[in-house]
Image (cartoon, rainbow, N blue to C red; front, top):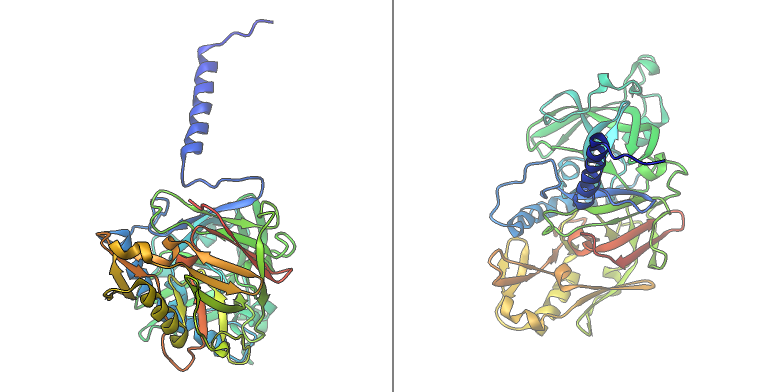
Length: 444
């Protein structure tokens, strides 16, 4: 039988080919290899739906983001000092103001597109909801979802999220799981705990509990929600049950990658076949955080002299080292950072100056002698590429050591491996087997 190519057939073929090529060339599209693979988008990149702040360079943007790190690390330090196994559902401006990387997902039935901040140190998910006072223009329209359900304070999720029980008066079923939290001194927000379908790529989690923000007053207003990837009872890993088998990984693109996105892989499928791992440590007082055993730091070939107790994991005080997606630059407790910085300066030599959060800046012409920095974990050594340990001024004439000291307060016992040092690495979290894996990967 002869096949006749009609104009309609030609048009259809050309249109299908155009769509295929467009998807292939779309740097913001998720690249699937058969696994559940979602795009991770730097908030201020072309792929992000949010308007970037006015800045003369990406360096200025990073400096602005890093300026919020002390508040973030203070918040994390406050968490590790708490003697409770219940995480507060709202933890203040430090949680809401960590818009470094976002992921695409859908809420409700039919699904409504939302962009949520990726946060490995929190459990609960948040979304600004319709009718919210002070929220951004993009909100989750609760009345448009046929599967939306408000939760009352008698359900176990409410106590898990709040750490509080129902009021003694009134019938339990009549009381919504309601929150009214203050933060930042002059700011507050209110929310209710709700359930609806969470859609991640092709997967649907039908009854996902999350905080529905009703109002915000004062301070800066977050443009997006938050997706908690911690390992507590309200996190994505816990609420998804066996769907992802307690496994996920991410690859964070460089902040310089304006036109590209990274990836979030959920579940064992598609994860690296061969990857070096280090044990996950568990703090019973803060089970959400991903603690690892950092045993030493090397600058060039020189081991940095650090007292073991400054790196040791202590669940009673919260001391130790965590991997966190919400902090921009790695922060060490003051004595550890000082020892690292002094050895780095000793090997680079020359004159040093400060730039924003960075106190060890030098002429870029001297960069050739800048030593590599290696983090030594139990069973794993991570030598940072220079692009993960140095940051340059907008003119390119100055290079800075891209790390800093943690805020020096009463709870300053926590070391934080931050997202600038994680860029272009595949970070694998296998909660079921209590390990973290790290491997080189071009995330862009």
